[in-house]
Every structure is written in C-alpha cells, then in structure tokens.
Image 1: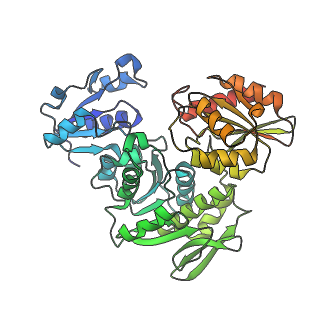
Image 2 (image 1 turned 45 degrees about the vertical axis):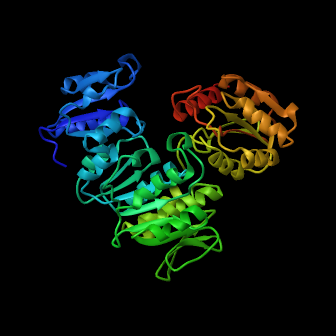
Image 3 (image 1 turned 60 degrees about the horizontal axis):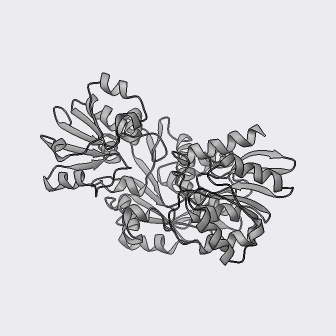
Length: 453
C-alpha cells in the first residue's frame, strides 16, 4: 500500500490504532490519530506518537476531521456505524481496518483463525506448530499484538498466525489469508452486529477473498460452520470429533488423524495432547490442520502438540489449597465458552460467574451449571439475572451467593465453602467491563487473590 504523502486519519486510540498510526507515519503519511475519549482517558504512550509527528485529536469526532483525508484506518473497537465513519463513506474516502493494512504489507502467508470461542488457544498453538517448520513466525491480530507489526517484522519467507475477530472484519475489503480456520459460531457481540446473521457474515468475510488455491478449515460438528463450505471458493477441509472424511482431521479411536485425499497421517492420542478438554481437542485439530496446509509436516508438529499447555486465562490452573484446585477461566466472556469450561470438569464445581451482561440466553448454561455446580457465586451487573435464571431452573437458592462487584469477596466466599474434591472455577460467561478494563485484568486479579491466600 502506498502511503507516502497521503493524509491518513486513524480512528481509535487502542493498541491497534497506535500501531496503525506509527506504521502509516513510518511509510511517509501525514497522520492524525483520533478518539472520542478525552486525552486523560487514553491509555498508552502518547509521547512516542507526538515525538513521531502524529497529530492527536481527542474528545471530538466532527466531520471536519475528514477534510483532505485520503484514507481512514479503524481500530477494531470502532464500529463502522459511527457518524464519522459513515461520513467518510459518503465522501468516498477509503475506510480500512488495521488487519487490512497488515495484509497490504504482509510478504509471508497468513493462516487466520476465527470463531466465537477458542481463537486465542488455537492461534497460539498454531504459532507453535508453524515454528516447527519456519524460522520466522508471527502471531498477532486480536491476540494482543497488532497484526501490522507482525507482518512487517516477519517480512518474506516466514508464516503468520492471525487471530481475527468479527470486529476486525467490519472494515476489510481485500484481506486474503492462505488458510482460514473457523472454529464455531454461537451468539456473541450481538449488541455490536445487531443479529446472528450479521455476526456470522463477519466470520464468513474472513475467507471471502480466498480462491481455489487457498484453504478453509471448518468445524463439521457445528451446523452453522459446516454450511459455510457452500459459500467458500477455497478447498475445504473439516475437523470433527464425531465424523471422518477424506480431507480433514478427526478421531480414529482416540488418535487425532489427518486425512489428505484419503491418505491417513496419525498425530497423537487425546491423552498425549498437552491441552485437556473436548473443546481443546477441537482447537488442536483446527491448529494442526491449518499448520499442515501451511506446509508443516506431521512429524514436525507432534512434539508441539504434546508440549503446548494452553494460554493464560483459559481454564488456567492457579493453585491448590487444602485439596481444592482454583482455575482462572476469565476468557470465558460468553455462555458458550463457560459451558465448555464446565464440561471440562466432573461435578462439584464452585462457580464464580457474572459480569458485564451481554443479555444472551442462559438456558443451556444454567441447565449445565445446575448439573455440575455445587454452588454459584455471582458478581457484577449480571448477578441478579443469573440468579433469577438459576432459581427458575431449580438451583437451590441457599447455594447461590452474591459478591457484588468484589472479586475478593467472591473468592473469600469460595474458600469458606469449598472442600475437596470440589474445584473453584472463575468462568464468568460475561464481559468484564463493569468491574475491569478487560478479561485479562479480571483474570490477573483472580490469580493475585488466590496466590495471596
């Protein structure tokens, strides 16, 4: 992408916005970074932006920001529906996302991972598998490192694993991975996208520019995802815990097995996998199939599949106290993700749940919680709705505790009531913004309190 002497407006002063602004400036653009928040609410190193000569305008988003602008770049947190972006469209000013900027600079193939749940685990594992074959491997996107930074760092003759969210796809036009893996699609981010149909369309947009020379890896066990094959121009490979096929990865007994045009390539058994739980079997399958299609051999990937133990904040073991194990699953920001956590354990769970309520249906989550949990400790904005749903489902009200907006109170309650062989599990089924700035901060607070007991 040619940026020299162009006037670029970057909207959204988050991690991706900072990166996009710096890259655009590096390549010769005149850059303005804008955010609706006032400067005192912006986190990050503003001095480095000012020193680079980037113009900062915070606290307002009037249409005059578009005067003489040649390109608008959006951070993922910025919806395309805001008035300033809509005005840019009306003025025929190109609008792209930071990942589209990254793609324009990428000289190595990209393996993209998207889905409602499991993206971070799968992308991180995929990065480890790629490292078994490539000397230079980037891991970025929604995972915390801006994709544009990784694309420039890796350059040629490497490979990039990219976690892609629905937010990031709103302002893309040409994003074109070599391999796309879609893990699952369940209700999430409906406040942003408006409907399941719109949300799913953002997921499908990840492979929209792929051709017959590319690959899409689909979860056969998810009906919505399986149906995407009809709308993909790329060669389709499936992954499944239930079915077997000529092109894909599946369980042959308890052995993860890749089939390429009917040629069987066994990997390792479920027990030999470094990550545990049925959902992680699926994540490992998706990562392995993607790595294989990126050129990694079966022999190269087996050690990494065995060694990889998961990611922070996803069913992360923290500590055992008096025979009770404590697990941090703060990354479970929706009910489907929390359900997967509950399914990982046998009965006797003390569950800490709640937070910034997404308003999604609770039926399946509460039904499973009633089966698996001995007690519920509820926090945040969602506490009352969660409690009402639990009581309606027949959960004994005397085993439901309220901790308000206080994680320490929640964990003190858990410690008082938990006895071996129970486990204490933070799996909120909610976003974190009512109490924390993100799920990472929530998980770190949980770990800080548990390790301090």
